[in-house]
View 1 (cartoon, rainbow, N blue to C red):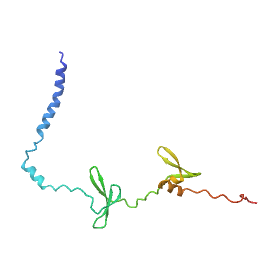
View 2: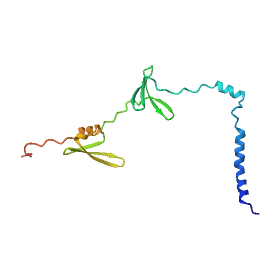
View 3: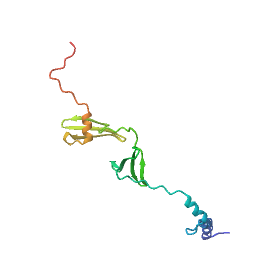
Length: 157
């Protein structure tokens, strides 16, 4: 007995159709509510209000605001895609030094810099007059070569 493709496809779709119909009947319509449901909704606590950034908060970084509450506790506020996040600042997080991780060496009127990265060592050279703040800090921390002595070096005699 041969079954046509059209009939086989229709029979395969019947379980899906039955599932759709049963879920549509199980869901209550939006206009029809039972008396018991309205009592439960009225007895439940109101949803928490969304957090807002206080008017006297100070912006410490772009997009991050700091505010002290009435008890003197400091809070940080940040805008996220889900609303305003309120959290405590991390205690004693050390600030990174500017130019940290950069080594500098002199090459005439220029300075050669090196920094280790996850992709290897990055090297660049800049003139001493064109250094940015990070490069300038690294250059100041670099060990400076000692001045040449006037006479020849003497060993033990």
